[in-house]
Length: 442
Image 1 (cartoon, helix red, strand yellow):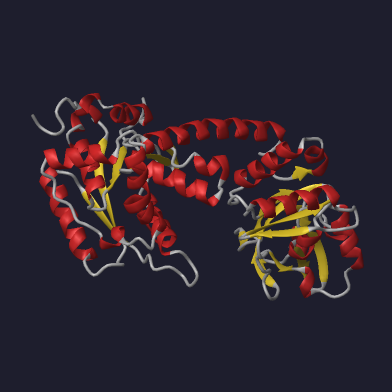
Image 2 (spheres, one colour):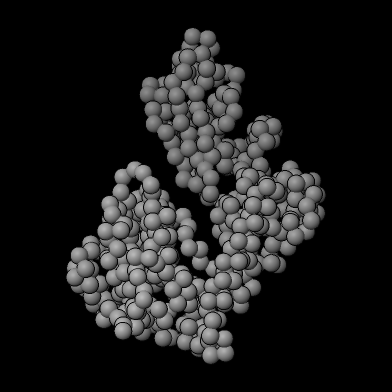
């Protein structure tokens, strides 16, 4: 009897997960298998190759990311190509520079480069399938618990999540590593070994080689128990996310009065949910407490500011605002704008003009072709009247130097986002240009 006897791949719950994630109507999509050449991804590739009929009319395609971090990486790519050719599966090889920047984690740099490459060709509805299994999940839970990452971290890897225009699916999360090993032995699979996987200097490798085997000798079901904990943590985190959304976490800005009306645990949950909803990584407990304290104690005459990595929280007029950190710089000098095409100011926003009649800036003031000069406060002298105008427009202080000012010669025609100045407005029956201003969002 084979080592994998009694296992019917067609009845595996992982196959049901894949089918449930596939679109029920519309054109066929591509199932992209992340194939490193290692044992786990080879098992996934081989298993899915045997399920082509069950997954039709959807297409299977393998993707190999060559990091260039090992002298044998090119040979590994050749191995992957040979395996895919033998299975009759198309393969895309993506070469990336995964070398970490100074001070960055090598693991994090490789992971970021890998997922960026895997996302590059995703189309709407496509699935990216990875070979993460139960023991991987257990390692992720332990790492999160050791970092004190809270429920969101302890929830570890979701079985299904959004990934670009498609989805990332981990169909083998219920498979222990021993089952993948049995499958590979039964089918006489040949794979490559990355020497870095045995380097115990990396935290995950240490857990895999030292900690989990030790735990398993005392508690044979340790990996399964840790994986179940991830499921429970994910459900609890989903409830906290629902509560945060009900408390206002999906808003662009957050009212201090709204925050102050909640208990301290709900305040922290709302702040975490608001930051997460806006793409900000979870801050440390100390940083979160500093933000909560500033929000609840800031006086009306103060402008509290708290940097959070690539973002910052600023508090103004009783609301928390999220901004890039640092703020993108405005152009060093005036910008000439011809109004027959939009003007994009990187990191600042977009200006667009539309021909009108009796509204907007009078076309007679703009020449032929119609042009204006876009300046910012740093480019003009004086400015008390302009400062009052921007205050009246409720422009936050840190944005007042970043609002485009439309000039013709020495005359200010319009502050973007406000009506043209009286002397510059088109009158009834007179051609004009209506200017739309869309500030950039981080």
